[in-house]
Image (tube, rainbow, N blue to C red; front, side):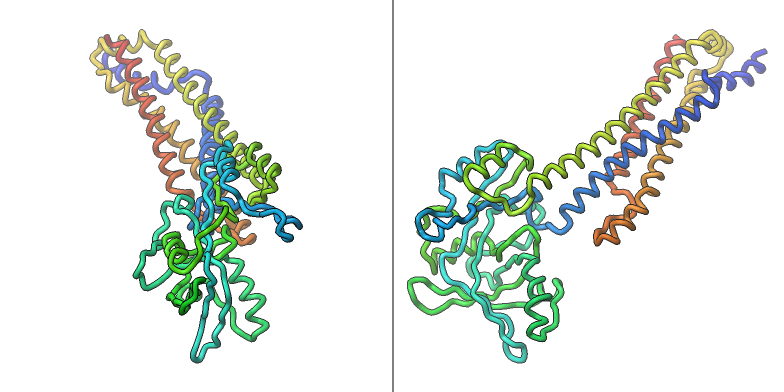
Length: 404
């Protein structure tokens, strides 16, 4: 009799309530939950990468502010400078994390490129410097101290486009790729305002950016050069760089209107589009997580029902000499398989769904990886581990109570 019960005991485990159709429905719902959760996370990561892939130098939330120039400014009646009081008002607006004035050159400056067999190109320029708080923390190679042999320079990408598609064709010159331009050394010349001989510096292009509108040099260099060659007297700032924690801040845009300020990029409509996209992805992710939580609760309810309906048979098996670990392993094996298969299917659907998206973005001139991010894979592994650990603890504690 003991042997007969031993052989029949495995039948206890798979006899879940509801039949195969219900199990298939739960599995499909779990696949949908995993797909929505992981897809929303991966979509958010891709969206952030697309916004930041060209802007390795600065914070993504950086904008430039300046006054809108009026006729009275041109006539000298009013000033387009941003006063210290207005700067403090900008800093106090909710949604503004950082607001710092841009330092500009207070001395004449020019650049010379070429010489010898290459035609020399010379042009007067103006320089600006951005406080380090607005740079991407991962940026390197943007330092300068007196005595350094090279001054790094950041150039607006639009400047290179104007050269390649405007100036160069008219002069019969070849276009220049970004990589080639970054290998060129040129001369940066400072002309002292108090008179004296011009001072030349060797400079090179450290990179290009779509976020900036002027040629940037390191703040230590421009502060030192202004002190050495220029007149640092100034009654205010021409432009301010700000970092926005809330790009749709109503108070921020109200301040712009009240003080005749304009923003360099990121109109309110663009900011709202980003917020709505983040919200849509958050809703999808929440829906997927809610489905997974519901499936987990249903799994637990089925285990509770199974144990409650067969608690007498479980006690008999115990009295016949069967150890608790046998039943626990059998239940866990079934539950872990039913949890792991939908998780793997959901991750596979995320991979398959990315392929047409990758092709579409490539046609639009954008690129993302065809495989899910390592962050998505790590989140998947952590979630499936936590779910299985929770199921293990729940099943183990419920069965051990019957053996006590």
